[in-house]
Image 1 (tube, rainbow, N blue to C red):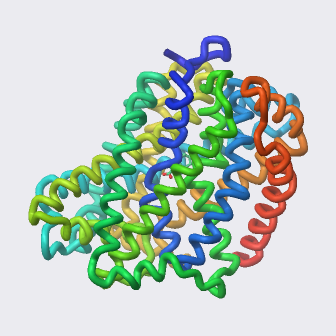
Image 2 (image 1 turned 135 degrees about the vertical axis):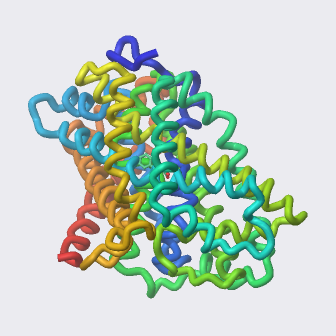
Image 3 (image 1 turned 30 degrees about the horizontal axis):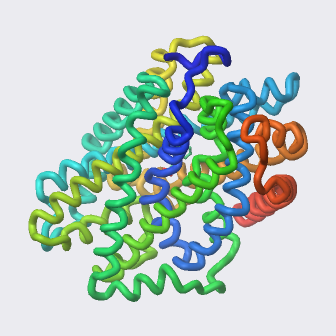
Length: 458
Ligand code: PHE
C-alpha cells in the first residue's frame, strides 16, 4: 500500500497500533544511548529534573501540535505547511525536517550498527566474567571496515522495512516487541541497582544538585527531549497523517510521552548504578559510554556464563529493533515527501534517500577511533558524530520545535487546531493548558534557549 494522495493513504490498524508505532519512533537509541550519555555529561539528577520539565511543558504540547497538523492535512510535512499556509515560506519547516531526517539517520545508523555487532558479540559469549568492555568497544567501532559495514547493514534494514509500507512494515514490528523491551529493561534495572556499590550511582542519578543547572544543561535537556520524542523534524506530522480520523490525540500524546520517558528513566537506572559499581567515571563523554558500560553489567548476570549470553543477546536484539522502529520514521519523513510531492515511487524514494544517508554517515562511522582527526576535530574538541548529534539531533530540532509552535499558535491558530482535535474525539481535554503552553511557554522558552546558545557559542 502506498501512502499516495490524501484519498488513498494508508492508515494505522487501530489506536493501539498507532500509539505503539509513534512510541516505536520515540523509543530508540535516544532513550538508551542518548539519555544516559547526556545525563552523565550534565550532572546526573539535575539533568533528569530539567528533562522531565522539558518533556511535560514543551515536548508534549509540541507533539500534539505536530500530530494535529498531520492528521488535519493528511500530508507530508512540506505539503502540510503548503496546504495550511499557501503562498508563504512556512513549508521550509517541513523541508528542514526532510533534510534533518536524512542527516539524523546518517549517524543514528552508525550507533545502531554498533548495536547489531553487539548482538553477535553477545551471542558468541563475549560478555562473561572479566570482560574487557573497552576493548570490545574499540574492536567494534575503531576499525574502519566493520564500522562502515555495520552502518551499511543497518541502513539496508531500514530501507527494507520502509519499503514494506506503513501497515505491513512498521506496525507489525512494533506491536509485539516494545512491551518485551520494557520488561527486559525492568529486569536489567533490578540487576543494576542490586550490584555492590550501586548506591553511589543511584545518588548521582536521583539526588539533584541544582547548582549544576546552567544554560548548557538546559539546552542539552530540551534538545534531548526533542530527540527522544522524535519532535521538531516532522516525524510526528508524518505519523499523524496516517492516523485515522477516529482517534483521540491527547491521550495518544500522553501514552507516547509517558512510555518514552519511562524507558529513558529506566535506562538511567541501569547505566549509572552499573557505572559506579564497576568504577567508570560518569562524565567519560563520547558516544561509546553506554556501549562500554552495558557489557560490564551483562557479564554479572547469573548463571555464568549463560546469563550474559542470554540477556546480552536478548537485550541487543531488542535495542536493535527499537532503533529500527525509530530509524524508519526518520527515513519515512523524506519518503512520504518524495512520494507525495515529487511523485517518486516509494521504492526509488526509500533507496535513494537511504543511499544519501549512508554516504553522509561515513565520516560519523569513522569518528570513533578509525580516523584521528574525525575522532577529535581540530579546534572543536569533539568527535564528528557528537558534532552531528549536537547540530542536527539537538539544536536543529529545537529550531524546528520553535517554528512549529509559532506556526500552530499564531499562524494556523489554536482555534483551528482545537477543532481538529475535537472533530473526532468530541472533547479536547486540557485544552486551556495546551493553549497557554503552545502560545507562550514553548516559543518563549525555546527562543531564550536558542539565543543564549548562540551567545555562548560565538
Ligand atoms: N526518537 C528517536 C530515539 O529516541 C530518534 C528520532 C529522532 C526519531 C527524531 C525520529 C525523529 O531514538
